[in-house]
Length: 208
Image 1 (cartoon, rainbow, N blue to C red):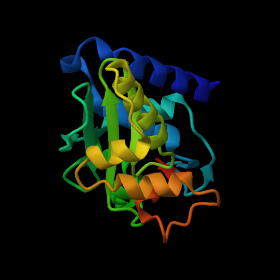
Image 2: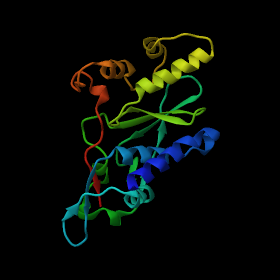
Image 3: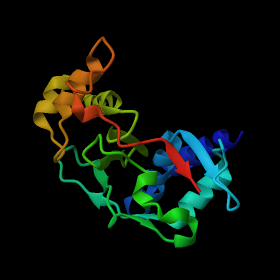
């Protein structure tokens, strides 16, 4: 039930931002995606290092209220209705606003990611439709859905365009769209050595 509540909150946060770009809370949407993608690992008590597996809306609120994320814009030449935002995972951009929540002096960044990716989470926002797409750093990747969306945009303007033509025509800084497309279209299990662009930045979810 708790996970359903979190998914519902995510739906609400992702569905209302199309009304006014200036009112979009990008940080909140990043937090929703990050929390949903995390696997529940453990909750450590004050009395001991004993842990229990847990992931619920109260833990999400703890995360939401006490972690600050500095979101930046990423250069791109996508059609005008799209906005690209990124979170660079380092101590300057992932901030624990309440040090009392970090026992044993663990680095807050270790809660979020490992060293397998390039340390960047990227979301593309469709301002008109109120949708967001995971493009880099997440466990899931929504590039194919984004390409369908862009293709629809061209069709509405009476232009036919293929996915490969979209990738050739448009770019997002430091994001290898062609690599991602090839990896996602691969008929076998994704080989991350061949397609490092699809690596996730997330380790197991650690909650205190």
